[in-house]
Amino acid sequence: MEELNLFVKSIFIDNMIFAYFLGMCSFLAVSKNVSTAFGLGIAVTFMLTVTLPLNYLLDTYVLKPGALAWLGEDYQNVDLSFLGLIMFIAVIASATQLVEMAVEKFSPSLYASLGIFLPLIAVNCAILGGALFMQQRDFGSALTATVYGCGSGIGWMLAIVGLAAIREKLAYSNIPAPLRGVGITFIITGLMGIAFMSFLGIKL
Image (cartoon, rainbow, N blue to C red):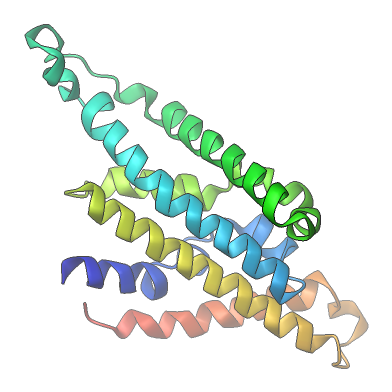
């Protein structure tokens, strides 16, 4: 039940885009059509779901103070927490390379449409933010970290697909010239953020 609450909360209440504004660069740049936005959303969801439990295990059994006690008494006082940020980024970058190769092989059209933003998943602050939130909130198990990662990814995907759907419809709208492009996109993002604030009333 606790995992289910965390899953729902990470999608709607602690949404990476509308609660923490993480991953905004690719959110704004790749939200011009639904299919591309959905593809990137799937990639980000996969990355969060895979890297969070890996980083949890890395943090729990290697990085935390005393985490290396399983190697023997000589390692009980070893503290490698200062390497946390670098190690998290290394795990994310490695997983990104695997995702990039898989997308290029199985969906060349999606690979071409995502362009530079696919390898940039490695520096997507939503994915690194998920790892840092996991560390900060001190989750009790790898399962909890996996649930949080999956929920956060789905929340990010929901946000970018929703914006892409609205932007596709706006192509047929008569928007004032000064607001066309990024201007109206910022306004819509703000309105979507206000709409997602209504989920703060959910008690989990």
